[in-house]
Length: 281
Image (cartoon, rainbow, N blue to C red):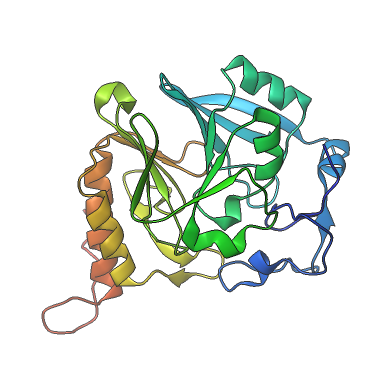
């Protein structure tokens, strides 16, 4: 593995040395309080980071790092009869992690929800000989251009039998989620990263333009996402962090979450008065 620069704040690897990280300088992210800092895969290994692989659901294995790097997300290895997909990405990669993933069948394709999770995606693509599927609307954010990156246009894109990418457009214009038709014994599953953020009350999700800077998403964008997800059934929603999973009635949870979000975002009360909290039970 090479020693290319990795932004210490967002965990994204760049194709050559540079002074700035455009992903962190964007208003959806931030430059670390100590200024722009860089690391590398070698430095992460020397610092003692190790891989963590654990089951997160039926045929779904979480892939993470201890201690966590950058934003702290974990990826998901989704095992299906038509091939294994790595959904989202982590920064750390070492021989032990490669071995564990290969023991689970390797990776046939990679799909990543949005630029904050690009990590060392090209390293992974080279190691596992797998294409990376990214929506063309986020082409500008790819920090290490490579022929392994496959851009797609439009609203939906099937990357394998029963596995469909959906351009929800939340958080980033190219923000995508993945639907697994046959997941959860045929009830379906949605892999959302933080395009639809599974919140601590895991019966709900939410929608943000920026999470660290607390900028809400535009109502029209949330409505479009809800419309695109309408035809797809799913019982579970797998978020971007360990155990952030809506475990049942996922499609209904997304609908009621969007309705709640829009109600507060638009202050949609009959008389225009401020929304009042519900009475305690």
